[in-house]
Image (cartoon, rainbow, N blue to C red):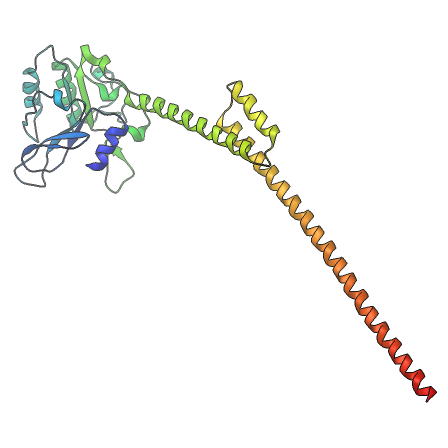
Amino acid sequence: MKEIGRQIERYKISILALHEIRWVGEGRVDKAKYSIFYGGNEKQGQHGTAFMIDKKIKNKLIQFKKIDGRISYLRIKKSCEKIPKHDTLIVLGDYNAKIGREDFIKDVAGKETIHEITTDNGMRLCHLATEMDMYIISTKFKHKKEHKITWNIPGKNKGNQIDHILIKKNRERMIDDNYKRIRKEGAKLMTEKKREYVNKIMDEIKNDNKSNTKLYQQLRTHKKKKNLTANIARNTWENYLLEKTKEEEESQDERRDLGTLLEGVSAGQSQTLRRRRVDGVFAGQCQTVEIQRSV
């Protein structure tokens, strides 16, 4: 549940429907950022449904009433008929219903489904939507196939779209595509991160004692024109690092050449000293010979 809690906070979900929670009885669990209202069987490990509600709206909840973990379409209809007409009615859950793309259900379902043919449970759900003047809104929004799958077949790389959301047709506009909003917010966040990245690069170059003022000015020019992208900054940074590395390599080469020159000078001095020592010994030997001859 902690992971689910993090996800509803991340995606800013106010109400989340859960099924197969397999908790015993009926109750409420309050956490710091959300509350869980659940209803399960008397025997643990079977069925069970719940709603996870964000802390901002949990105090606005009037009533939570458990009906049954395995409810029929007839009971769903009877329960919905008890809801006042001026209230917004949303029905959601796991119906084990595959909705196809047939034209005869276009009044209650859209084309954004991964299935071509509507199954028997799907037809029952469409009949319920027709009788209750509702629309299966989960088939309206365009997404990738893998994002439409609500249940993965165990052991296979396949899945089904069997969980659905229904809403009264006169309130259909209330349902927004949360994924698009999240993408926009993600893009905004990425823009902020790119700006931080660019500023960091500029600070790195500016604060470096051996900074390349030409590169820094290029960044400033792009930033003033408001066309400074992360790619431009990255390329500029890479060029800066390449030039810096090149300067360091050239400096190392100069030090290496100087070291070789000093070694050559030192070697030459050693050879001169050795030559002087040999010459001195030879001169001493000559003097000894001359002294012996004189004797």
